[in-house]
Length: 448
Image (cartoon, rainbow, N blue to C red):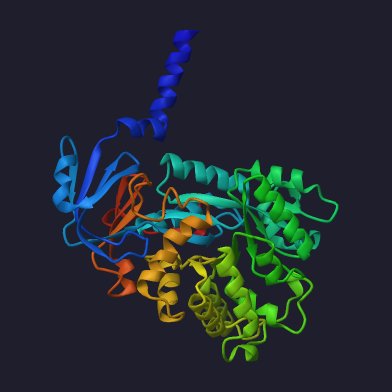
């Protein structure tokens, strides 16, 4: 029996990244121009030393020789290295389709994306994808996902039926209907049991329940992610309630509305005439967010997409907010010192060579007035904070995961140079852009 147990331990240890890491070889990425994600100026002629899935040292190239004994040296002279990019708003399993999800994730990884935050879907599928990504069974960023809570009326939404297929939406741990009679301790514990990193507060809840969910989630050690407006809960209810991240910059404009819409599916458009200049109501929200450290997952990309869809189908209902107002509000938040992350809430076309995250980052610079350096911090260090992993990733520092992207040109000179990625390193494993296999028509259809 002891010998069988010992043999099993050997197999488990051999398969575990943590144990494999102990015996992994050292690799030196030499001669790089380093943007480390902290906001510090670019450092030329640097070396990144990795051992297994971790960064062992970040040193001037002249000091790398002390690590060379038995190490592999990868010459990256003249190239720029940034931390792995993080998309803080995706939906991989609203309608679970494993083949298409894997194709999107593959494109992400070969484009320099090393982590994504999934903002609610079928947690059964997301847990499986997350495990496969972590173990290297599929080429994919690491996946952190949400368990959703909303008022009972929200679960008429057909998306929730797709994400709870085979069960009843609102009655499963990853899609829970919450009322003032809900045992929040049990509800949060069930959400945690799905493997979720955060609870997403979505819609149709009053401020008191937003505060109650947030307090109980934090007591149990799980993050809270919320729509900026929850209907009837206001942006101020969510921010003052202590949520960690709020999504969709335009929803903040509802705080300045004459009447807050009472339900998510019956919300009116925001009132753009109130934002010809900085609105004092949103100014107070942004000041509160800065003080509390609340992160804004702005999602500029999705407002552009909604506008394009309406332009192509003018008979459809117009979007509740224009791309121009979204950019204006985000610029106000940026100037107020709010921490901003880079989420897309959608995917670029399957035949596009790069993911929508590149578009989002470019919009932060071109439309919201952020500097390229601040946009990179949003896409890396702040992204790591959205999933509670600032100690593990988001910057290139000793002890953190070896997650970084190698670029042929500097994004500080032109943010579109993020599209010159030549190599992604995720948890110490290399993925050459030259080896990227584009999304096929069969994958785009989700065919088996």
